[in-house]
Amino acid sequence: MILEDGTKVWLNAATRLKYPVAFVGGIRKVLLEGEAYFEVARDERHPFRVECEDSRITVLGTKFNVDAYPSDSVVTTTLLEGSIRLVSEKVNTSTVLTPNQQYIYHKNKGSYKVAQVDAALYTSWISGYYYFHEENLEGILARLGNIYGVSFRIQSDKLKERRF
Image (cartoon, rainbow, N blue to C red):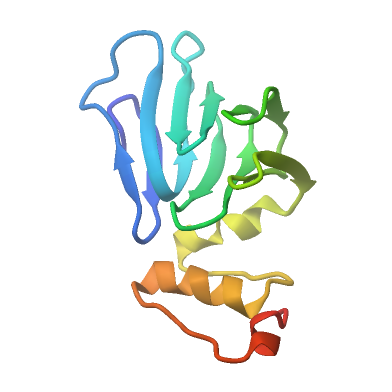
């Protein structure tokens, strides 16, 4: 979809995005529940803000992905282009990402880490491709369950932790 300011947004399965018909005031704000990829229209006088659960992401113009499903224990933000500033309610500091960095916020612990990644792998879903790198089967099936609206049950604890 294209928002009224020219920002392009791709929504993944089971995702909700709340946004105004027209942005007014100093900040262009949207609320996200799920996963979305953003190509934000540049407007230095009106920052763009994505709010999801305990996190706020502020940008001027950039490309990034946010994975913030309510059922997941982490919120993951991956930057492709430009820079973004992240603030989490339980973390008293703001963090600025540069391209190919990923901010992983652990909701239950109130902690985060920043990792160097290949950002293209985390946005491939907008073209219909899903990559899983060294992820356990339980995590892969949870993701596929979100995408296809089904749930999986793994009976073997050993198999749950096997990495693919």
